[in-house]
Image (cartoon, rainbow, N blue to C red; front, side):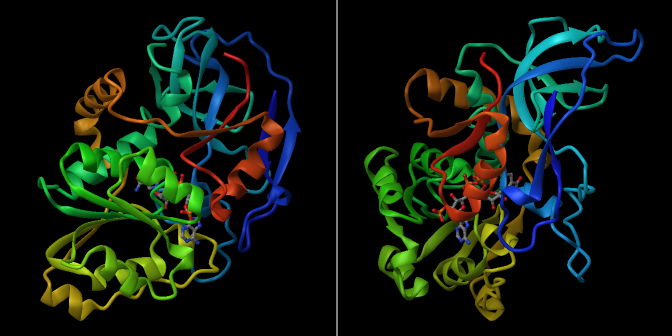
Length: 341
Ligand code: NDP
């Protein structure tokens, strides 16, 4: 079984040298009573939060407590989709299609208590790491549960062509909002406007002053800011929020590599405009999981949601796929296909 392990902690931008491709023998004969399952991994998710688990925290900064730090030499676990190839767990049998916490490896031995759900093949299996997986739940829960949109709200989304961002924008359009997204290059901006139905979009890298850029796109202010990036964009968005505006803090990728500036929004602005800034984690919203899956599946069946995927091939390409997230080289959900399905 080939798997990726942490070789060196990340300082700044991640690269191939942070990971080591290792091989270990794998027996497909499981011990009766262990309740284990072996999954052949088809697609594994490539997620920004992983960087926060493989940073060197010798300095004062601490790992966010939702994502424990990985040890050197440790296998990287990650969300994925695959097929059961061996099982002594009565809930799973060979050939079951599953999604859950697997790993950056070709096969995963799943222990009882680990998240593992059966899925169907109604949709392409890769959707279960994206639109029907954690990114989809994050976008749906963050937008509907945290932002509580009203029809006609003016919505701004950052990293809008990314996995979570593109879905937030599409959900917002389906909810009757006015939506503007920002992204890091022209192709992404064109995609947002021409394929995903955003009302407008801009390349933030071409804006000398983010505050005035947002003022241009939202002359009457922003009702909802769905923040995927933090840093200066968060400051600029807060400065442009309407009274009683809502900011959903989904992630702060511009701050993960330690190269970007930490956000310092004007707090007096927050007070006087009575802005709500709320961080959230998708897994706190599992009470709407069934609603999210059925609504999203229905949108997919009726062609109301476009699915944007960016899939690399082969375990040896996982490190470069991961590094791509922090250079903005991905468009839509980044994943790696490890085995043919
Ligand atoms: P994306 O698919 O959006 O990929 C990351 C994107 O972020 C890149 O394509 C790039 O787009 C942008 N980016 C990278 N570096 C910077 C930077 N320095 N400044 C501004 N933008 C940058 O990833 P996800 O959709 O998976 O994740 C989006 C955010 O959501 C992340 O912050 C992530 O941590 C968070 N998240 C939070 C969850 C939760 O439960 N709260 C769950 C899942 C994700 P561009 O070209 O536009 O710069």
